[in-house]
Length: 509
Image (cartoon, rainbow, N blue to C red; front, side, top):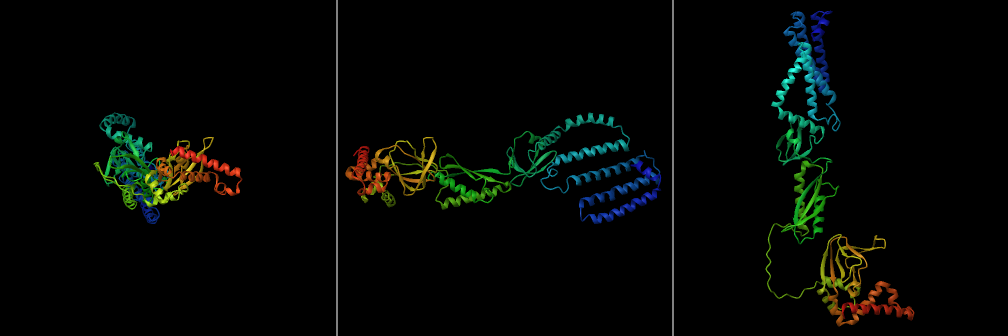
């Protein structure tokens, strides 16, 4: 730098140079006042040049030309060193403004890890230091580098842990395993990354504590990034319900609670799984899909609160661990009390229309109520048939398997509908698949429940045979026999009698 001033002073007096520098100082002050409102970073560069470089330059002119110190004197070298330090400082600040200041979030410059920026700045500082030692102080850099090589070995052993953290941090950041703002789990520590530097990673836990983990530890541990590969995180919540509560009803309730909880994503849809049967409850696992882990505890709290209120409204029970002891005693059992609704349900079944009220009550007393869950097969095509079903509530789909093995839907049945009359009366194999489309309650009647009625009233079997033939062949053909020829009537009666005999044989009348 002194060489530059010597060249300038060869044509100008030192006082002229000083006056020019002072004038430049005031000009930059005026510019700084106007720029600071528009761009504070550029204004800071102008201010640094005005307050650091210009005064040091004036000092260098005074030392060289007014005080007449030689170029190789210590005062000149010190001022020269200070001047070059200020120049390199301004250059580094200018590069930082050009490359990184004001960049939009998500751009490649914004995503450059801080540790790489710091290392790049360190390299430039070392280059500047080498330049000053070589140009200003006239040092032989080869000898200096040789000395540094020997010294670096000693320093390397002394700082091996620190250097290990440095290189581990560089390796992790080059792999882009995490970034500031990500939630990670390492060992038993879980938190959000708030800072990444050359030595450690800083996490803020949910308890608002700050945890610093050395990069050397990060490099040797399994890191679970809760925000990668997507921002969707699945939170698992386990909860138990009573054995008396139907699993499908419980799962529907838990899904409803999840979807009404603020912060739980509707897509992917929350999942509910039955996990096992414990001593006091059936265990369920709920998968909540979230995009904001910062409010995880609040979301869990809202979800579990929703579950309690929904369970209360739907008469479901969240049990606590208990042990129940059953003591069997010999008691006189009362005759079963038949619900009038079941009798009414049977009265609406066409094949039971010949039965009197007392017969319907007897049949209801001997029937069983069974529960089927959603997607559960009630009967299978081709299986032996020995029961008749009346739907108390719910809905089912009827399907048949064709000759090519493909399933064909042939109908849907709901509350009040029935199926399996041929299996009840003749034992014929099932002619179709019946699958529950939602949780169902069905009334099941086995041949043994019907036998006492048919033994006392044989004509009922004949009436049932006629009704079944009606269902099979159509109401008009069977009931309007007056319009049929004698041969056709005889054929229909023959089918009815044949079916009547099969019923008596199967039931054992």
